[in-house]
Length: 247
Image 1: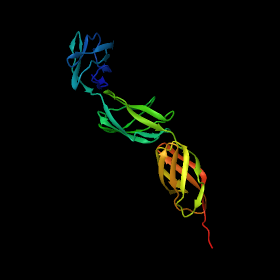
Image 2: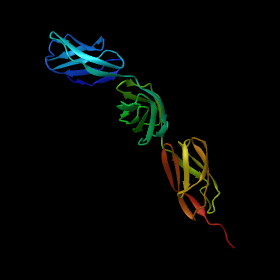
Image 3: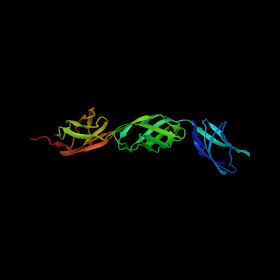
Image 4: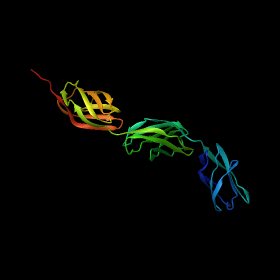
């Protein structure tokens, strides 16, 4: 006499199907000392909604012919999510985050706002999740659903890709050392600035302005790439290295 599923939340409310023989006219389905609500009954199957409970309990069916053998049902405690790491990423999604907490081993879905994905269970205390795309930049609630229920929400921030608009100045010596102001949007989480593929030192002033110091380069125009937690943006031929004078 199998039972499916054989586990559910401690709060009850899980619909289970018990299959066997001579089950018609069932008068009760017991989960431990508590009685389930029978919603359907045939000679070979019973559908019931389990009561609240905890731990492992015996499940049996009572009919006019007596009580059946017992099956085990496992009550799963509600999960707890503690952190999302990192707590932000590109609006396009596709990056991987780690969710830490307790009771996560039966996780089936993780929701980021209105979008849900299937996590990879690393352990009972950790999930690995590929973040779905967001509709726009901003914060959304993140919740984990397991057999035991759904966690209280955590917060995850979607970050729009940067949009560099201008550089000042747009040229400087090939030896480097030019202080360049980059103006645009979404620059607050900048992680790298490159000139022609070479990393530059930089300082973020605010979400629309940063200052970078050009590294040495080769004479001619080069692409300037700004990378943030929200993605990357390129100013093609945005800066020109100029040869120094000679006599």
